[in-house]
Amino acid sequence: MSLKNTSDQQGITADINELLSLRFQAQNIQFFNSQRVNTNQVGQHVSRARGRGMDFEEVRHYQPGDDIRLMHWPLTARLGKPYTKVYKEERERAIYFIVDQTASMQFGTRVCFKSVLAAKVCALLGWAALNHHEQVGGVVFADDGLYQLTPARSRTHLLKFFKCLSDPDNMLRASNSHSMAMTLKNLSKTLKSGSVVIVISDFVHFDDEAEQYLKLINRKSEIIQVFTYDPLEASLPDKGQYCFSDGQLHFLELNAADKDVHKRYAEPFNQRLDKIKTLSSKHNMQFVALATNDDVVKTLNHGVMRYGY
Image (cartoon, rainbow, N blue to C red; front, top):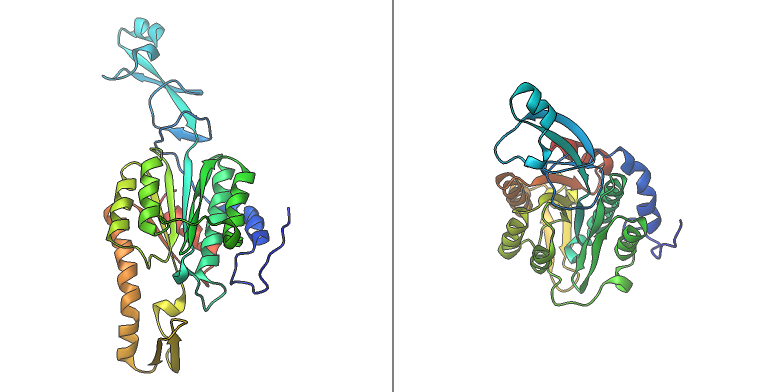
């Protein structure tokens, strides 16, 4: 499938053809591991939930609380001790992507904008999820609206998400609830227990309210936080004069050769990075930092494998 990309400047707007082609690289991403889920739909995940499943796994001694309907009566009668059968259940999870496309994400000095990097991450992990027979959906939020997609196990479904990421002007729906905090609040009301929530953002607008809702979501779901950034946000070059603007009336000129300027420049970024890393560590959320000039597949693989997904 090939669709026309409306942008003539590579790296500024996500190219839907590139997002589609990332399905080949996604085959090498080790994204999932068996973990507890609460759903009745069949997939390819081994569930820790107790009950009758698809495949018989083993026989073990009966333990208080085991389902008496699964008793292995012949073995119990023969050995004189209670034994029960254990089954391996296969189920699928819902994967929710929370993709930040606000103004702060429309920045990049290496390879692409952070917004484009977020789209690539979503595509890679979205394809990986489908490869593991999971349901994929989520929310794209920007300054002027949002796009919401209920999770489903379908390539056509995922393509709708890609269309929004590559052509947000025609896909985003005007809303008063498109901040990160409101997006997380709305998700917390509808999220299925046992789901996986992947937040892809620079976390510039991650305030105390957003943090509280993320903690609430974390009580019943697995969370992966992908922290996107540009190298110029992390530190200035070693020398030179640089002029920054907010695109309107404010300008700032910095001397990169001044060590004190270097230190003060890096402080806001380091504080933001440390805040998300500390939050992730404290609440057992997964965390991956990804720069616009990183090898996306390699970095995701390292982060995902390191955290056991």
